[in-house]
Length: 140
Figure (spheres, rainbow, N blue to C red):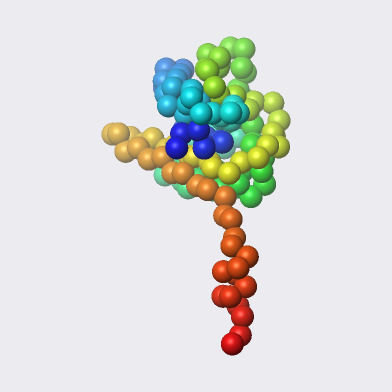
């Protein structure tokens, strides 16, 4: 469900109209969920890497997975919250200054391509089952 998503790696190509539309949709669909008990953290890697075209989605998916491993959200570099974007979107927090250490159990990566080729991937933190793990490696 929408309120389970803790982090979104936004497509965010630094186009004012596109970024504002994406942020508004993230806010409306994920950030404003009536069951959300904490802000939805949003950042983008493109401020650090530029747009890597065909590689962008894979790198951003990897960053989204790393938030689950590190329990930390990387900031969007080169984003000035005061001037670059209307970042007062309800229910979401843009991470812009420094890495934010926070619990992340579900992350999402948005990738939008030319001609309407769009994808959003959702990743969840792995939770091992100690009983199954024990039986899997036991010798009988």
